[in-house]
Length: 565
Image (tube, rainbow, N blue to C red):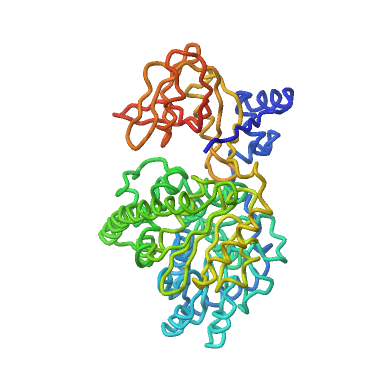
């Protein structure tokens, strides 16, 4: 699909030059800072060197004082605590974070992760009863629970105290827990609303450490898990998230966590500098895979074990199941694309709601994301089984998915999530009406322009200015993720040197020259664009990010193509 290029470098020249001088930084990189809302020396210092001390006071979260006091009581009395978490990476890392911390304090701690197929998302009745059977006195939910009114009420009825920690959108009424910690609560004045589930769990521990007046060093030990869960959940990497991930990545590269070290070794990243890209594309899919195809508790065991052999065994299983998951992904994606191309009118269709018997509910979220990339429409993928559909939904900028589902709530058994990602369950006979109404909402909300993907370009760049120092400075802008994506540059009137080729799985590879500089360029999945390239002519405009390429022990800079004209 053609992208609309939006150049974002319209900043006052004198302001750019002033900050460039103060920072001793090329003006083109100062434009990148301006695009991220950084406009002064002090703001730049906080951006490039976020510190632990800059984190918000956890007691600004509603009911945090109550939650921390109740958890402190459990620590002092050595009460049995059960941590109940979601089966995705955010939930798994949240469970492991609390489990490791409380165990180190001597608290008898268990955990429970629901079965994706049998129980679905969120706090389940089975999990509540399991907590009682294991003798728990306190149940803590992580990355779920804010809409679990019935299940929390059951837990209280059975004698369990409950602390809910979550980051999803709450309903108008909160569940009857001792405390509900969620920055998105309607009454929350917390300065940052976009914490991941593992970030909210971390804030609970931050409050507990404050209550016990103990050293903050113990919190640092879990930052590797916080970084993985936050980056994997695709929340905005700004403010507290940026601080937590940046500090967590530094720890992850040298983590003492036995399970993480085993996983890093299996994927070839041990003793390497880890980036958010490594988390999103390499580590997270493997941690997710066992929960998609089986029990996610194996992933928790990986992250909490101190047994090196057990860690290696589980890491190998995760790697193997991820390969199986990818195979199922591909089959499901092909089937979904065929349905879209045969049954949906691209002119009148503002959204995609697809349902099929036999689709694996563990992969439909991934496939929904891929369909959004391909067709740029809010997408709901529904797996049917016995007249009940379990769905995953993904959205595009400008369309609030949670709000749209809320308007269709009378058609669904249950739903939950946030603006860009959600889950739902629905009776099969309601799907046609849901499809019609969901598309009606999308048609009312989305303009033609919003259905065209935008490529936001930070600045125009001359290739002569790209050298080792430039790339070193560029890396300081990380960690990269939503609202702080890897900077995109455009260079114009480039000459293609030699013949372009298509390599691997439809990847476009070629070389470009601008004046004295020649760079390798690679466009992943862009092989179909080879017809646009005319070797020998200085007529190519290229939008790209700058990467390092490691090959045969040699590291060079390369241009990773986002689009070309």
